[in-house]
Structures are given as structure tokens and as C-alpha cells.
Length: 573
Image (cartoon, rainbow, N blue to C red; front, side, top):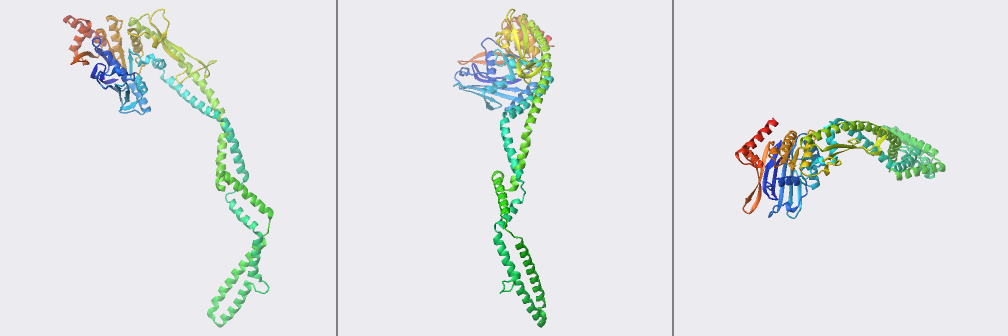
């Protein structure tokens, strides 16, 4: 609800600070005192259009600030909105402000942070309904009618279940659209991956193959030189060259002389063992070289095979990685992606089946929801017409119009396919005919003035439990009605204040008597300037004001005013 309102340099208001209370607040005062200017200030605060003419003469800017306290359904909705726009501040409270500068530029703020006017207006629609100017009256917006009807009919649970199905359908359709849109690209990708996987698999690579092939290639490409060198080593070690003895022969001779030395000097005996070990090691080396040399041969066919294999590996490395390990890893990754893409066709079939299933489930729930709405619509219309009869508008007709539209992509309802949203298949709009013989028209096109205000009051009264807008403001609600109807209007407003904060500007004492808090707006001349002043009335002052509104500020008038208050309190009790 609106807790505080601070208005500076706005029209004839110099500096006005208002404190509002829960329940029914009424503003009274003479014509031109500034009652509607206060409503205009609230309208501007909630995102209405501003102009430099609103700035008080001689001032640089006008400023309006409002503090709202949140509770109940409004708190949940508003806090969620504030979090979504990163404007959340103190829990359970929200501060709005608006400035109009002399040049016409305006600044809007939510919780101290500058925002666009449209964003301020969006939040304002959640906080306040103003009847008079109409921009902030949610009942005039057809998009809200289905929510109000569902709240009136207590359809929250089935509607939530329907919304869950619709959300799943949107996800299914989004994935299907992605698959269908990318079908050609997926086909091209499958062809490429298939080729890559096949090429790598056909190569049959082994992790350490390249190093082994390179060693074999070096042996094969240098076979003749290797054979020559092996023969030379073998000759030097074990055969000699005819004129010169071999290394083994020389060591054998050395051992013979060493044995002779040992016989003459026993201390040299240990040298014989070293010589024998050297002889055996050299003999082993000679045998290994002989074996190596006998195994060498020049095989041009094998050399060609090795070179072809190395060329294949080099070609694959240029495509898929710097090593065989990287090539094999690339192939494995490509195989996994290929498997996933190959399943896309199966996935599409599964999604299409789920889409059809969801469309039938949505159709069933939406049809059930629609039937409940149609029943509730009749009850709502009867209740509103009864309220209008109480307000001396007995000839007014009210209708909740429920329409549906065919759509080839819609949900299945019987043998039809109907357009739908998360709220179902129905398009709901409130229609009214204020006078016999006139056609039913949308609420936004009803006549302005007291007649329209009473219509809104009737709707608000019937929908009071369903309407989450916390603060309701009625301006000009008494236009064209007399005291007897005024008492009924006062009773309705007082009943409405059980679930909402109600602010009402009125000239009828029969309405004002039902208020919980009475505020008097007056004009005062200070020096050469006219300013608007506001005063909260105590019991005695309230009786004097009601008497003045009755046109009899006398003892008899004050007695009548007191009787009005007593009647109002008796009705309330």
C-alpha cells in the first residue's frame, strides 16, 4: 500500500507530505483546492506522462516521492519483478520517485536507481489502480481479464498444471526447430565425420609404430653400407686380412706371453683372468657382428612398403594431429560425435511423438479449464450486475466474453486445433452496456465520469479477493449520483477496503462518512502565492467538514453529520 507521499513544487502544491493508512482514506475539500492535483501527482509518480507546465511557477523542478509497503499477493509479484530487473532493495518496501525539470525533461527512479519511464509505469500498474484518468486501471486492460477470472474461479492449480505442460512443449519445439533447421548441416557433418573415422580406422595405426618404421627405414635405405661395415668389423675381430692377424689372434698371442710372465712372476697371475675376460667379450662381440651382418639384406619391396606407411602417417598427421596418439584421439572424438549425430533422426522422431502427446494433453486440460471459466463467467456477470443494481445502474449489462481461435499448429480439442498459451485456449474480455439498447463494448470504451467509476467499483468489489493490486484510487466517483446512492457507494468502498487500501476523492458526505481516515485539502494564500494544504481531521473537525459538505455548517448540520458517521459505523460494525 501507499504509506507516504511527498510532493514538492507541483502545480499549486509547494511542499506537501502525506501519510496514508490501511483501509479507506478519503480526500475532501472545495473545488480547486488541489484534491485532483494530488491524484495527478500520484499518476505521475506511477509513470504517467509529465510536462513542464506541472512545475510550480518560479521553481526549477517538481519532485514526487512515494513509499510503498508490500504484503500478500502484491509482495510476491512485486518482489519477483524487482529481482528480475535488479532493483530490489529493502525487503517488503519499494520507493518510487519522479522529477520534472523546467525544460520538460523527467527523471524516474525505483529504489534510488534511475530507470526508464516505461519501467516505472510497469511497476506502477502492479501497485496502484487509479480510476479517473484511467491509465493505471488494470481492469481496463484486456490482458488482465483472464487472470482476474481465473482468480475469481479459483483455477490456480489447473492453470499451473497447464502452464507446466506448455513450458515442456516449448522446449520440445525449440529442440525440434533446432534439429530441423540444422538438418542439412548435420548431414554434411555426418559425411565428413564418417570419412574421417573411416580413414583413421583403415590406417590401423599403433601408438609406437612410427618410431619403429623410421628405424627400419634407416636400416633398409642403408643396407649396403651396413653390410660392408659389418664385414669389416667382423674381419678385424675374428678373421684378419691375410697379412695382419685378427684382434682375437693378437689377444690370444698376448695371453700366451702373459702366461709365461706369470710363471716367472706369480704376482701377475691375476692379469691372466683379465685377459681371458677380454678375450671372451671380444669373441662375443665378433659373433654378434657376424650374426648382424648375415641378417642384413637389401629388400627394395620392403623399403617401398615402409616409405608408403610413413607417408600415410605423415598425411594423417597433417590432418588430425602431430602424433599418432593425437590422430587416434581425434578419431575417437569424431566417432563419438558421429554416434550422437546419427541419433538425431531417432531423437527427432521421439520429439515429434512427444509434441503430439503434449498437444493432446494440453487440449484436454485447456478444455476442462475453459468449461470452468465459462461457468465462473456467468456467476461473475450476475454478481457484477447485482452490484451495479445496488449502485442505481440496474439497466447495465455485463458480459465476460470468452473467445477461441483455430490454429493449424494448435492443441487438439475434439476435432479442432485451437491456438493456446500457458493460460489455455481462451481469450477473455469484459464487455459492458451501460444503457438498454446499446451494444456491449470493451471496458476501455465505456463513458467516463461517475458512471464509469461506479462500474469499476462494482467490478472491484466483486473481484476484491482476486485482484492483487494493493492500492485503489477513485476520483470523481460521486459524479452524477445523489446522497442515497452515495451511501451505497460508501458502503462498497468500505467493504473494498477490507482487502485493499482505498483512496477516494469525493464531494459527497455520505461517501466520506464511511472512511477510516479523512483528509481535508484546502487552498491558502501565503504572500502573493496560492498553495495547497492538507490536514488529517480528528473527530470534531471531521464533523465540521461533513456538515460543510452537507451545506449546513450549523448545529443542525453538525448533528446530521454526526448521524452520518454513526450510521456508517453501525453499518461497518
